[in-house]
Image 1: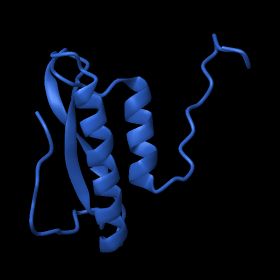
Image 2: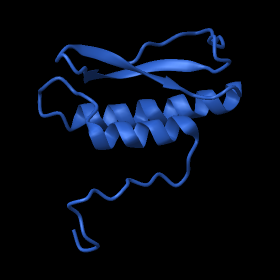
Image 3: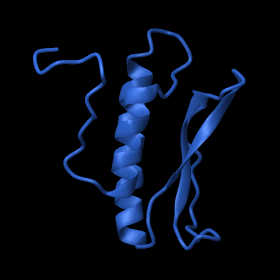
Length: 100
């Protein structure tokens, strides 16, 4: 599964532009697309979509012949891109130290 491409951009019920990019495994183990909400400004939403599509292409290129999928870290990066957060930062896990 890749990216759904649409020519026309419409605001959703929450007043944001959204796109389904890439796929992930749900809690019950089924594969589905992930929906990103990209904000209410059209130009910014289109820019964020391009960044997410680039990230997804990199994930797909590193998938080693398996079906590409968002993991915990890449989904966090994608979510921050969708929110327009810069720079993108991953939170430290409990098991990590400054040197890990």
